[in-house]
Image (cartoon, rainbow, N blue to C red; front, side):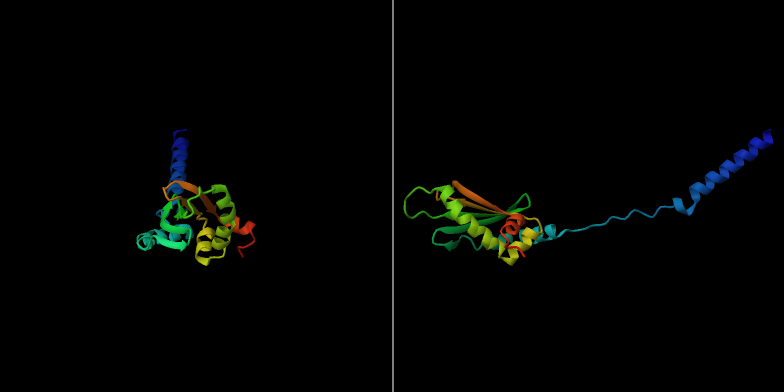
Length: 153
């Protein structure tokens, strides 16, 4: 009986040894893969250029609008504009927004550089302020805006 127990124990040890040291249980050293997305590359590139870009601002866009800063916040590109109100009348935010939004979307969607940002799922937000620094309105543009307007090809 002792002989059977010894033989059984020996067989179990051999099986355990084969299982532990078999090639299937040998693991490759873990490898770490770094992958950079198009979004990360574009944000990084733009971020490194922001100081240079902002050093050229403010820049008059038209007779009523001045671009005064561009930044990246929460992986979105934020452009800030000042609306010039030379007439002295109070600005009607909703009226201005309803007129200007389709033009902004059309302009962004037809601009190859800005479409590259949108295609990488980077939203572009344009904020418009009055002369006192109060937010009048903002326009958020994403790739869906361009697809919905049938501008993005």
